[in-house]
Amino acid sequence: MDMQTHPTHTSYTILGSTGSVGTATLDLLRHKGVEPGQIEALVAHSNVEALIAQAREFQPKSVVLADEAGYPLLKTALAGLDIEVSAGDSAVLEAAQRPSDWVMAAIVGVAGLLPVLTAAKRGATIALANKESLVCAGQNLMTAAKRAGATILPVDSEHSAIYQVLEPENASQVDHITLTASGGPFRQSSLAEMAQVTARQACDHPNWSMGAKISVDSATMMNKGLELIEAALLFHMPEQNIDVLVHPESIVHSMVTYTDGSSLAQLSPPDMRTPIAYALGWPMRIAWPAPRLDLATLQSLTFERHDPRRFPLLDMARAALRLGGGMPCVLNAANEVAVEAFLMGKIGFLDIARVVAEVIEHALAHDASSAVQSAHDIEDILMLDKKARRWAVSVVAALGTRVSHAPKHVEEV
Image (cartoon, rainbow, N blue to C red; front, side, top):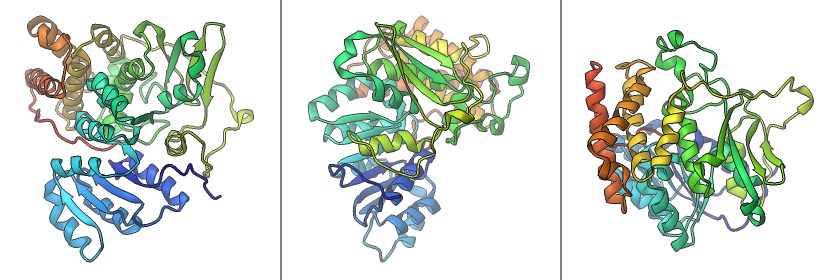
């Protein structure tokens, strides 16, 4: 099946090209028949072999590796090709600055913040898979995008669903929005069972194929908490007007309920290429070999409330949103440190929530002025992020572990 796309998108940058979202984006561009030179830049963290293969296939103008240790191999492998090769954090920002009109932002964590902000400031259309950019610096990002005429298109399946069914002319008539959550692999597990969970088990999501960090976030339901904060900023929605329902089939991706009682939902099989394709084609739609929804084969669609006793991080995120200011940044930083420690086998699965809770309590008790009051610029936000990471490392150490707290590129979505 041939793809038909909107003519305004003629060049592409993929930030996080070797992660699951990046590879799905390239798969869609492969179906589209993107030509050599149309991809302005491919950026990866440390997966040199995958980046080399992508560069040879798609012939981008530039490739960048955030981890400088892999630069010699990358440079040697692409010698003789008309491709610029660079490495390091400054090179990542330079890639975001390159003149593509469409940018996939798929670097996980606060590490993706500056590249997203750089692309926004030059007026690009940004397909946003890096939710932490909005969680930590939402007002800064939205203001920068508005000033530069940039467009931010959400790629999370839930926010893409809302974006598709929230009618601009009726935005003032929205009663509430509902984010759906799969519930992750431990939706029916007891606390005793969750205490024994391994990193491998936490990354084995029943519906979605994702990177390690976001898979763990889904398993703890922190991912839904971050999405709740993101939705409030994207759609100018008060916290109390955002509901969350566990929907294990992952067919209804989210809903908008209007004041007349109508609820509009977007449905599709769980495949990240669907929201990515929407962002690629916007404001039109593109045809691709998409899995089709066959309602006749679905035995049921179920919905339930989450259990705050087993999944407390969702409620912590809601509280951070209510507190405002820099508290979502504190929440995110503590979670990143805790998830890294868990993936390294240094703390237990249930300890992730414990670390986040103690960091929030510390922020409120000992540093309320900087943690809760508004952070007015990116430098303030990044300093708060570093401070929260130090607090989180202290909590982890008290649990008998040691992890690095330096801000870094964790991985790609």
